[in-house]
Length: 390
Image 1 (cartoon, rainbow, N blue to C red):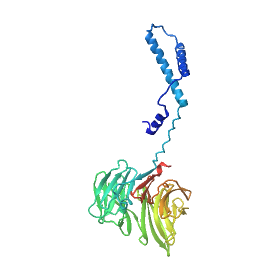
Image 2: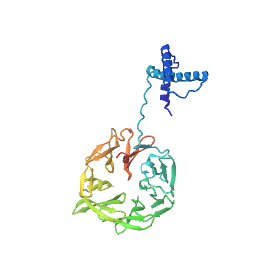
Image 3: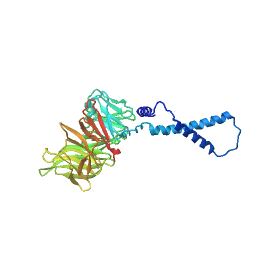
Image 4: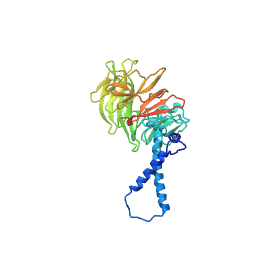
């Protein structure tokens, strides 16, 4: 359908009345005469005079219309050209979930596979569809408070902690199973669940959610602290702080979750470790020798060497492939900006810079969608689909 504005412009550019001067009339009649005389000879028919007159009048009318159109194009005010519409932005998306508090969305999880947002209101678990903009209750709580920070999910499984138990929901069947022997830090990984437990020492267990089989993946050495782990696709890296002859260091152990086989161990001479992320053949970590100034870098798994990144001062980070999100100082506070790694240097990108409100808590999905919370009045969330920008 024609744009109403363009249609109006076209209407206004055409005069309401058109008249023919004598010169134009003679031109049209002469052209009609030439057209009739130049027709290819056909088998002669005896035509009634009235039909012949109709033919002449019709041909003259056709030519008159052509000349009028030409005359209008030359004399009328030029029609405004169609203004190109802005390119539809598919890589950047703002999400507003009505009647949901900021505190409930800060730990929400976006799933690329189902295009939905999973969150809790501290009592129940909900799903908000990006396509239909509808909200669905996935799991009803038992009366105990659900800590949003314990929420973990993929397209088939959702896990959370409440009432001293780990609860795991099978979204396909609606069945829920509970785990009581645990120390928390549970995380869904494919069709399995990882969580801390106590064996001889603190250990990470792997529960097959279909098979119900329980396996020991990694046992910490027990002499250190700051035990943690992170998962990416079918691998997990476990970190802990240790000491050798009074000199502290951090040890990373990498596993294949399909076979539970150890892939490698890596040690770096830093006593303080912040956020750890796993990406392909790199282990990213914020490290510090004194607990004050933290440096962001990565362990190259092939070389076993720790490389520092050239990045601006920041308070939080997230990484996926060559994409890096940093919470950097702003005019009065801080906000998240998008960067790309060129070698070991972070180069700022233009994405997200049109968002005026403060952006916080960067996290990437496994497919590369950057998920951010906004501190605007609507408690908006922003998604940057970096996989469409490759």
